[in-house]
Amino acid sequence: MELRQLRHFVVLAEEMHFGRAATRLFMTQPALSNSLMRLEEEMQVRLFERDSKAMSITVVGRAMLQRAQEIVSLTEKLEQFGRSMAAGRAGMIEIGFTGTLLYRGLADILNRFSAAFPEIDLSVREISSQVQIDMLRSGRLDAAFINSPVPPAGLSSLALFEERFVACLPDRHPLAGKRQIDVKELRDDVFVMFSRDPSPAYYDHVMSICAAAGFQPKVRIGAGQVLSIVALVASGLGVSLVPESVAKAGIAGAAYVPLRGVERQPSAFLTWNAQRDVPGLEALIDTVRCVTKGM
Image 1 (spheres, one colour):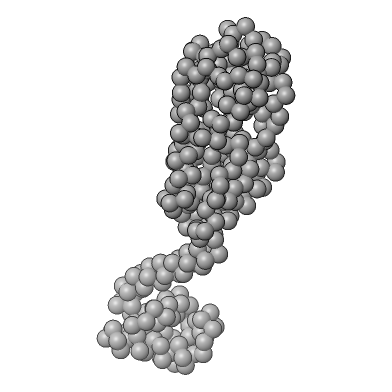
Image 2 (cartoon, one colour):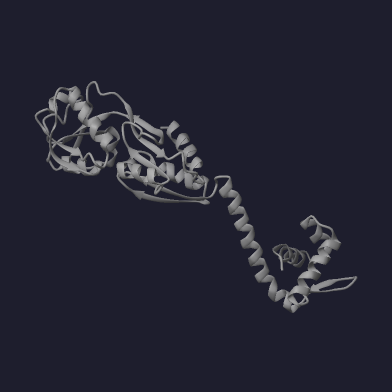
C-alpha cells in the first residue's frame, strides 16, 4: 500500500465520481481506476460498488475512510511543516533574556513574533547575560537578549535601543530631588553594584563612568539582577548607576536622577551564533529590527 493510493481513495470517496476525482488529483480516470484496483487487491477488500451508471462506497470502505483521512491529513501537515521548516517559518527557538528587558520592549517583540509566526515555538528562560553568552557559544541557546553596553565578541548582535545610565538613589537621599547631578557627587556614597560574573560588560561600564569622574566606587553589596539592585537601593542600602528604562519597573522607594555628561549608548542586544543554522531565527531577527525601529 502506498500513501498516494490512500489519497486517491479519500478524494474519490469525497467526490463519488471518477472524473471529478481525477481532475482534483491531476491524473487520468484510467490511472485513478488502476490505483484503486491495486489498493483493493492489496487490502483484499472492496471499497466501492460501481457500474456504468453509479457508484457507492461499501460498508468496509466507509469504515476505512476515517482512518485513511486521518493518515492523509497527518501526512499533509507533516509535509507542510517540513516546507515551513525549510523556509524558516516553523521550528523551535531556545531564547534567554534578562529580567529588566520585560520593561524595555521584550514582551512586544515576543508577542509580535508569535502572532506572525504561530508555527514557531518559543522556549523563553530568564538567565543572566554572561551565562546566556556562554550558552550561545556552546550551542545550548539559540538567541539571547542581554544587558550590555557592548556586543559580545565572536557572536552576531543587534542593538535593541540606546539609553543613558542614571543615578539610582533612595528617595530620601539628599540628591534625589535634583534635576541633574555630576557622577562625582556620589563619590562618598556606598554603592550597590552588579556583580561582575553575571555581566562583566555592565560592571565594567559602571566602573568606567565612576573612573572618568575621578573615583572608584565603594561597593557594599553585589547583586545578580538589575531589579535586585534597585530594590536594595530603595531599601536605603546604597546608590547605583542603572539604565534609565529601569524606572519603568516602578519599584517604590527608588529615585532616578540624570547624570551630567553621560551620553546615550546601546545598553541591550539581541545576540546569536551565526555559525548555527536555527530554523526561524532569521524571522526573529527581522521582527526585532522592525520593533526597534519604532522605539
